[in-house]
Length: 409
Image: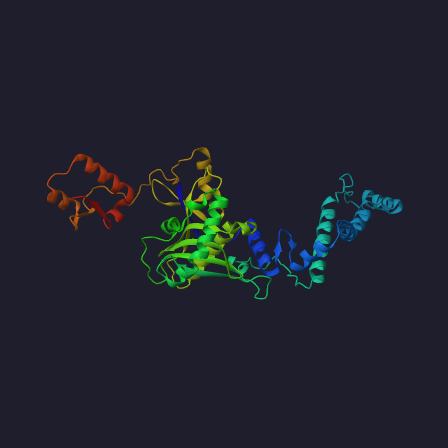
């Protein structure tokens, strides 16, 4: 397992991520689901119509849509005019009339396949534009000089759309009034998700288990910092909940669960993109908060590899604790599951603990240094020394000098 983080301020959505954002936006604004517009009127008409009439209408619509393509195909496949073709051959193969000039390169065949493909592409683009105009929708003209869309641009929705969408940030604190008011609905979505996605038994997703797993935490609320549940609501109904920790330098994604009925919206990817945008929003007032942590990355686990698709992403080297671009790490992890990710063989962990002098200990309700602890206790077994050495090597010098290691009486 490797700690992974995304540099949120430099993030740009990929093509597939744009597709997810576009799909979500289309559903919120137009009610479009699985490639068609779904409305109550459509359902009523479908129930009234007979199978024969539905089939006839579909055939008629298909013929109308294919008519322009058929005309274009006839033009492209029709045999050329022999007189025009002869004139073209004479024009290409005749030598130049200028004295001393080289003859034209008539031996090279003329390839028009590229221009034909371009004509077809332009034709399809124009056909799409006409359809959008017939629907009364504005058509955005894209130019090469236009700046690429930021993730925030994709998360802006029309207020008069088919659905209403909003997010809500609730402290992960059972004593918070807003958390208590939304607890039952949030827990029911969690239970539904665990049963459908992870195959858990309903009795294992009890309210007590939910509180212990996703509500209780050691973080102390301090202004914008702390543990939160981020609700994603469609038409005032919770469809997903992102459990996050807002820390001084990052937002850490703890867990996500969603209503399986809305899985067609790719809510796993969508909520991650929304949380990256949330990092960028908080950064405006908290300049140190710049990263989005997605937990652990496991290269050999297909379900975990999606975390590396939020570019730019970095993995923490397990030996030097320096961040390395994930692109340079993938070949190493393809070769074997564990690898030193830092390419510099001479680099060492700068926070490595070389001695136990600065280790802080909690003993008899008192804070003391390791050396003082040995004097107070009188005799320290060799097994305990090795245990503390292992602890110090794992947490590093900075943490060992700030955190208290409990020692029983």
